[in-house]
Length: 304
Length: 235
Ligand SMILES: Nc1ncnc2c1ncn2[C@@H]1O[C@H](COP(=O)(O)OP(=O)(O)O)[C@@H](O)[C@H]1O
Ligand SMILES: [Mg+2]
Image 1 (cartoon, protein in one colour):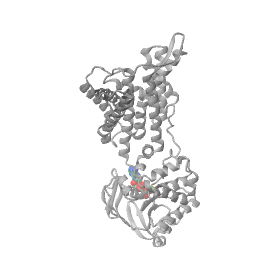
Image 2 (tube, each protein chain N blue to C red; image 1 turned 135 degrees about the horizontal axis):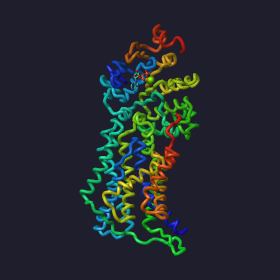
Image 3 (cartoon, rainbow over the protein chains, first blue to last red; image 1 turned 90 degrees about the vertical axis):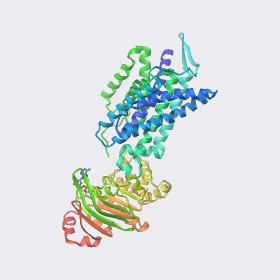
């Protein structure tokens, strides 16, 4: 039981990170119908920006760790969002209205470019983030096993829950969120009502990148190391999470992220660490066989 | 108010508008009638820049809007209820109306009050998903959504299409109402020649991408060719 609880906590932590990245995939897919394959690399850039920002914050001699993390969080979100914005402007907007495969190819090119760019600037070796937060709370103890929720996990889960709540409010309650949903349902009609569609799409990339930035920061805090290639596997899993939850569905992306995190944690905990990725992808295949639109996706056919 | 000269619009190689000239004056209701495929919807959409006219000129209140981006044209005070209504099916009635007010956020309450007064049904259904409304209600929503931007020029594409006679009457009454009470200029295209020409101050007839006739609503209603082509048998 204690072991199970511990895997649950680990899985939720991982799931929070995947869920935050998955939202970016699902939102962009919803609004322009393409998979932004560079999104995983935007997450990776977020992790690097976080590490650089931490280093800069230390030089100012800021003593309070919560304040430092908050500052780094804001800075990372802003700079990573700028990358997300640039990716759309450079790689996708010029191709809007061209053949369907074009933006997809451009996305893969962008992904490779971003990896090489970071490799060139930051080197190919792993970059460490000195442990900032140590300790945690022991939840229960039994059978010689202590269930620990460490402070990093606590921060990750709390920040993710807050962000997702705020984000849901933006989508469901604000003019920007309505504009995004309108563009998703009928872009031409949205323009006919005075919505600046290009700007709305830009802001969608910005929001997705800002959430990926938070995931990047958390990844760096949780694992303590990053390299230019972390975006590949994390991106692939987050994408899997988005498809599992139903691509285009926001609650689906969150749910999918948590499920992938849990599957991974339990598989490594009870079976073998080596095959944890295979487990996540196998579950995806199974779900898609029985529910082709994902867990919370809506059926393609819609009565209007 | 709206002045169109020598407008040509293409879909690929197909020439859908073959040099259209027309005028809509402030305060008027102008109807354009024409058979299915004549180019009526293409004309209304060309005014808003989608599809973009290949040549010719569109002036709105003296301003050249021929090459302006769609969302900017709309911000000048033109609203359209397009062919097929195109309401946002997965949003509520209220959300559809909120999006309609995109260009006039400060006048939201005023717009909402007007729409609910003209279409009390929309108030009853405000929290309902728009995709589950009946055809007539969807048409009311499409017109209401257009009114939410407080336009000076309202473009309506076949507001009577597929609706029960009672609902058609109600919708045409609303058009007459907003024109009379607020002086809103209305340009509508219709296959339903009888109702629209009776409603309109002036009318145009479109055949195959060209305007073949124009005159007051009464004149066109009395015209023998118009009667033979659009009124006798069916309408
Ligand atoms: N999206 C489109 N692509 C190609 N041809 C089109 C398109 N829309 C309309 N057309 C063609 O343009 C002509 C005018 O169509 P339309 O403006 O819809 O006529 P109306 O509204 O009078 O029925 C028709 O021949 C139609 O087939
Ligand atoms: Mg039409």
